[in-house]
Image 1 (cartoon, rainbow, N blue to C red):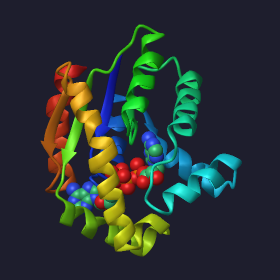
Image 2 (image 1 turned 135 degrees about the vertical axis):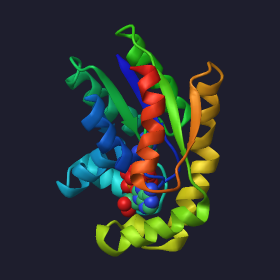
Image 3 (image 1 turned 30 degrees about the vertical axis):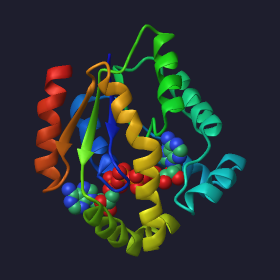
Image 4 (image 1 turned 90 degrees about the horizontal axis):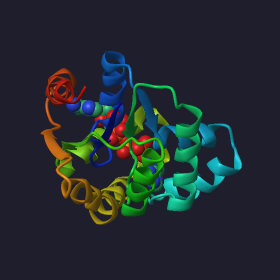
Length: 191
Ligand code: B4P
């Protein structure tokens, strides 16, 4: 199996690129952000809980996120591999993912981070906020909080996988197709 973590700050293009990677490599795309938004739209108890955190640009607690992710993986065992998009976002999430995959003698093949600077992120998310209906995209101070949370709580996950030589960065600025080309260069070495 090829198990990829697509990594990077909010708005770095993880969701955009994951959609294209799935088409080319046939892996299962699991986006915790999309799972939360699905629950939010359907007004489930999980969605109601997640909303209080997401609207502020904070992370949803690990216990909730890990349980949801585990259920999704358990439902989809017979796949060629996974693209984890927006997960893990904390060290406890990374540890839980390693245990979960380890139960099937699987592991993370690589973590690829999309490298995008703060000002580009702010401008992309404010642009998306004009049409996305996402409360976390419309207010610049919330976007900047999401970036700060990423630096403090999420970026250590890069170092965690780097210790075993599984982390790499690619330039996340340029056209969507150019970035996809850079990602495919790395993916072709893994599959
Ligand atoms: P996510 O849904 O993961 O959202 P994201 O970080 O905003 O998106 P992404 O990086 O995928 O960007 P996209 O492709 O859409 O998380 C939302 C919230 O959910 C979090 O803040 C948190 O509260 C919660 N959450 C999710 N996972 C969690 C976890 N594991 N633990 C705890 N909480 C969690 O691209 C962004 C925009 O840029 C788009 O408009 C796109 O069109 C544009 N774009 C993409 N590529 C571009 C390019 N090359 N050039 C110009 N624009 C581009």
